[in-house]
Length: 107
Image (cartoon, rainbow, N blue to C red; front, top):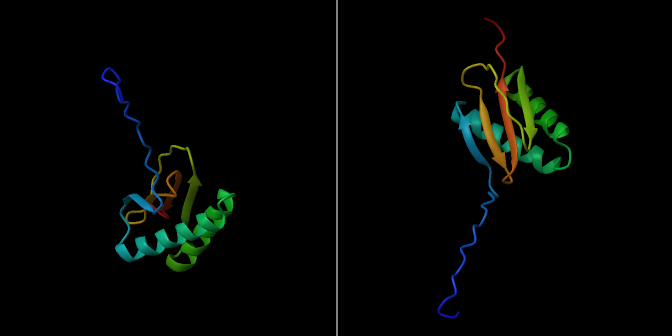
C-alpha cells in the first residue's frame, strides 16, 4: 500500500443459515413446533414453495386444528386478519420468508 492509496471498505452481506423468527404471538410450544415444521418443509421442497406451504398447513392443521394459512416465498408483502396467538413470521436460509397464521373462524 503506498502513501496516497485509500483502502476501500467492502460491505459484506449477512445471510442467516439458521431460522430467524421476526415476529410471533404464538405460545412458546406451538411456536417451536411451527418453526420446526417450517424448516423441514422448506428444506424438503426447496424448489417448490407451494408444496412446502401445503406441508406446513397440513401438519399444523393436524397438530393444532384448522384453519391455518401459509405463505412461503422470497419477495412478497401482505396484510391479514388473524386469530390472536396464532401468527408466525420467519425467515429460513436467509431469503425465504414464511408467514403462518390462523384465520378468524367467527366474529
